[in-house]
Length: 391
Ligand SMILES: [Zn+2]
Image 1 (cartoon, helix red, strand yellow):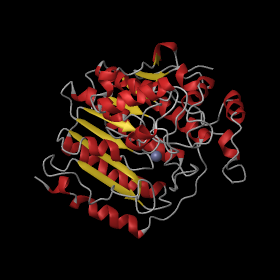
Image 2 (cartoon, rainbow, N blue to C red; image 1 turned 90 degrees about the vertical axis):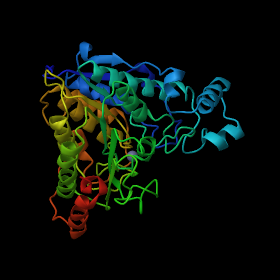
Image 3 (tube, protein in one colour; image 1 turned 45 degrees about the vertical axis):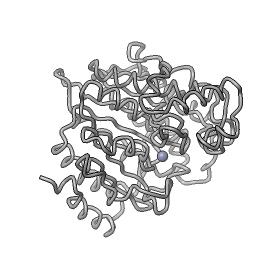
Image 4 (tube, rainbow, N blue to C red; image 1 turned 60 degrees about the vertical axis):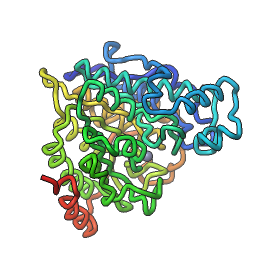
């Protein structure tokens, strides 16, 4: 089976990700990029010309954002094969959250190089998709929340070097705190994050609607905290209330989308009630409204992000790649795709009603619900955000 692209897009992947990373007892110790790549191939939906091998970021590139101390201590730990106590304490490397594993510098440095590459792909006139990226929590001097290097920050910095104004939109279930912090004083980067309210979810601080950036930047930061079990109709209303007014007012030169799949209901760490269709509809809206090159190709850089259910993740990113490259895929999984997903041996939610559907279709069966008053209240507050209030 094969189908042809109708849009210029590059998928940046590589053999590096086939290794077992994050050890064996970690939410990220699951196949992600390689499984996505293989599921896309069962649909015949990726040509050789669209595939790019990820390159490792150079130290000087990592140091656009990260401290030289962090980069060198991290590199040394990989070479030594262990993390010393002072390095563990200062840089939060080799902890339960951000564990040591073989090549634990090289693998994230490659995922980060791929986001810089993706930015160069976008500058060159194509859409860039780096599913290994989206590590939005990492700080200049520390690993945080499973994230070692902040590749979205570095991808955005590469676009900024062209003088472009960048709108970053983060649909991961968690607050994009590291990216927000990196550009909090930059009036030419807007960070928008929709995420589980930090009152009940990681990182348990920030990310409230009131956290609206600084006066120096002109409040170029918008957070939409979502209540538990937010469902498709609610998400769509919230997203629409923010997206069009923001695009019209900020007028970016490029959009960077962090597309974590932990926003989808079946994710073991997510607590939202959203379907794969909602994930894809949101991506479609972003794709359709992004600024474009002269030939109409969206100036859009897409990274992966969180996502701890390998089957849900591979289905969602396969659909995402189809959108980006302009392909129509059948909803039904090809027999080889269903077999591929079964071969993962994932059984965490095998007793749940949704499990069988994971091997039949790349979409979910969902019920509809009424929009709750707390969502209407949130929508009513959005025009009061200081960015929208300023002339
Ligand atoms: Zn997340």
